[in-house]
Length: 114
Length: 112
Image (cartoon, rainbow over all chains, first blue to last red; front, side, top):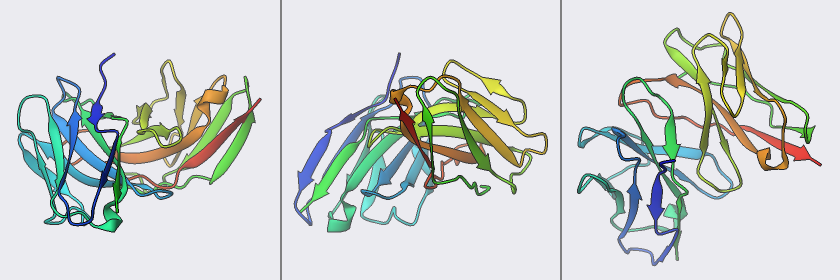
């Protein structure tokens, strides 16, 4: 069964460094998402992406964040200058078209900013 | 998106049915009810969704009241592996902006 994959599973970085989190969505899906979950808190929407552009973003998704689909398979989230409060699990999700509303999530990347 | 209300926790015995309630009294006509679950710190997992009719798949059944103001997710024979946080989410199904807004969910504990 196709699934969303994410790499790395755990990333440790120092404050101020740039990180890129990678996702490979399900191959025929059209809509892509990033969510994050700070330890012990709710899953929060960051951004949605469709047709090679951002369709919606939350207040969390400020100028330090960017997303890209550099080729036909990868979907990346870049944090330009990490802060301590960026430490969280980051989940990528994808959704098919044709009225199929369910999103399929990857296993997540645990980002630790020290 | 309409807000949902779920009790914080419940438990059930292994092998018995688990009935997880959700209130969504402000749901609008074009919004669907989705259920996801999150086992420990894994990525949320899609379970089932519906608009107004009851739905069943290999994982669960979804019962939506006629006025659509509440629903119940039924796991017919709960196992220990069903212990998780279950989220009831109301959202439009289609469109690029169909983000999911997660609440605190209901923590289901399945006991042996």
